[in-house]
Length: 313
Image (cartoon, one colour):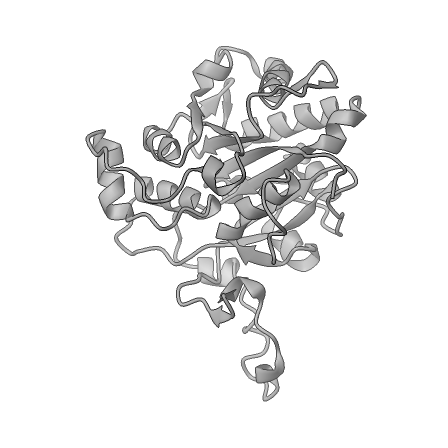
């Protein structure tokens, strides 16, 4: 735990887990210094379309899964549904935490504003005509929103939390989705190497999801703790993983495959595990955080910002 409140930058690659390749060296470098694990999601509906998936998974990540997705999504897409969200705002839930998100998804903008986020577009936060070589210019622009400027930590800052949403298929700074994420992480880490104060106060998370489910995903991307114990008479003695439990009772709707991949880093705060690459296989075998429900993620981050009690309590 830091001796002062931190500020958080969450880079969310929506549907990008499958796109991570060996040449994305900046992502792998980040994972090698971070604490890595999985964020387990509920099962999706067979009739769920892509827009509904985007909203539902973001809602899980922000622990806002109390909304009626079918009703609310129809209004978000048509821009006619003005019914207030029954869930308190992020600021109300987390001790006045000032939160913002950057996205070009229309439906996610509407949804985020209902949750109390200040919503920005990429074209409001940066010049989208920049070349890939100019991505380092974008990093200080975003850090400035969190009160980090020219190596200094400002007491007066706009936001405590900034969520950067990059969706599969988007082109940003002439780079396609995962390429942009990789270059962005690289620019951020290179900047951090020279600014120790910021590195100690910035809680950085990289989260990616698998997107829509495919036929063999339950075999290829399974995190179930039952597979290796199904045929054993001793299987009943193995404890359940925490992501399957809520309030001391088994969760009724939890997906045991295609979790979000998560890596978190803050100097002298997060522990380092044995992961060497930002990949499902490496995190499964060497990650230190195993799996937690996706709806616990924001609580964990808020705790680092001194905006929530111990998230596991």
